[in-house]
Length: 395
Ligand code: RM4
Ligand code: MN
Ligand code: MN
Image 1 (cartoon, rainbow, N blue to C red):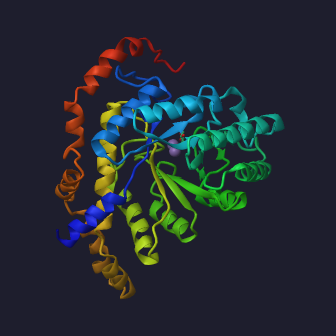
Image 2 (image 1 turned 60 degrees about the horizontal axis):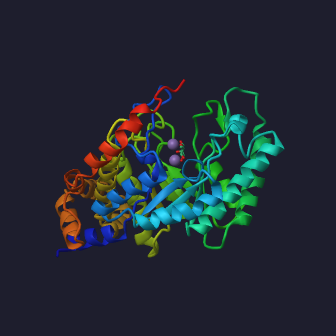
Image 3 (image 1 turned 120 degrees about the vertical axis):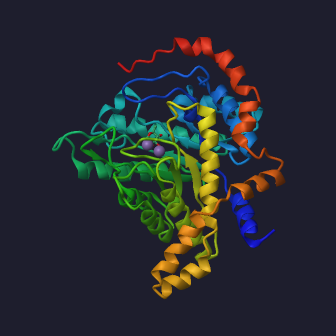
């Protein structure tokens, strides 16, 4: 093996991606849903589909779960989920409280002016911590739809204080092995202000909450052309980067397949992380998760495509010669420094990844292996009658 191959193998050995349970269910846009006959409707089906992705890729052992969607009986559903995970050879991953779907959250959860609703939101979060503990999940991942649509309608400073208080109380309830991840988003569903609009606000809240709280970067949650890798570099430098929700976007929070629009962006993010690890000599403790809405492409196929592309971009970033880059930066040799990134990005890493898969007894082409397995035909048959009945209108 030459040194590039060794680097690639090492990078792949270390790289794991968490896939979301909701990525296998029928989802849509605010204009409606196009239902897919093979989509999962139960948590059991989601685990079964996720297990297929792991079977052919070997790098997706955990499934992110949404509390309202996957735990209809709250903490009491945990046992059932543990059983399903074991049956399908998967592990429960991050636990995502759902503080946006219930009717009470019309004007917010932790930021709601009604103390009774804030209390209920906190209770749901505490229940989610219990769920995570029962399932041995480490990360409780918080995303809030809180915000307002019109100027003057919300007291921004008071809401900030309520968030600080509730997140501190949440942190107090964490078990010692757990982490609290705070996700930010500048728009949608609120279109005037959101209570956690950017990484600075998320970092402030995480730091106020306590040492086990970190920031989660969802790549779709930025304004057009924002420099995400700089945010990543700053969070790394502050030891505040906890995880990612990967997806790609062209206009807003489009939740498209990773790397489909701008693969160089994902490469640059991975590069900042690997450069940090090289410089500090210690691995960054980051959860790589996918948060996409597969509403047109086949769900299992798109998830496999996602994982394959993520591996390629991670490996390309690992090929950057850090020593040479650091020296070029010190010399202010701009062309040499930039070329090191470009050369790595332009390397065709697919043959080496196939060799790595061979060495692990995994199929060289995960998507082909899945399509040839007969699984898709089987579930399409089993689920189509039910899925065809599902209401697809949003109104
Ligand atoms: C949000 C955000 C959250 C996800 C919800 C459904 O835009 O990305 O992580 O849980 O969507
Ligand atoms: Mn997200
Ligand atoms: Mn999102």
